[in-house]
Length: 190
Image (tube, rainbow, N blue to C red; front, top):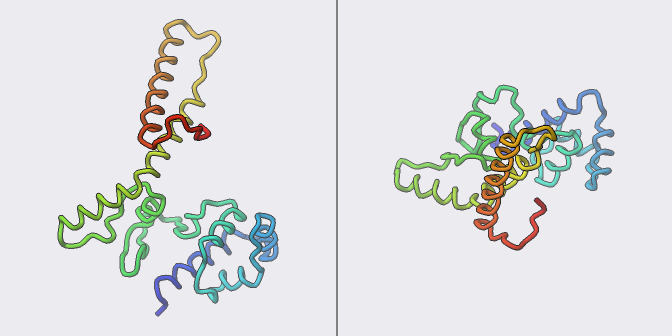
């Protein structure tokens, strides 16, 4: 029986082969080189056939970019995201839960113990450890909302006022989030 990490590498290899479709392994090798990290055709073939027992994070990123897919898709490929998957050794969970955890969207509970207070402590620690990521995600979302606001030329005074009020609220959110991130006076590119 293969170990968890070997099964994960095999799953990634299968997904690479499926996403590559009719394109050749050499095409994928060339594409990774264009992106700045050449992977040989043989390495790609070994991954796809399960002979390669690991995938580095650098390889995962460049392969995902070459295949024009999110890296998480290579790890948890679906298509049934409700189906169970071994997210950690010996820990089965629905694929969508694994994706959400891997993306930092939700706490996982995969390491919970029978001791409720210990589990609560672990979840609090997790939330604190991803706090900055969560705040940046929220800030990015507010910037997207701001950039999508358009005040039509023919907008009535009331409509214009409502849109401006919404922009003011977004700007308040930006100020609050930037303060929580310690970015006051720093250009964050938003």
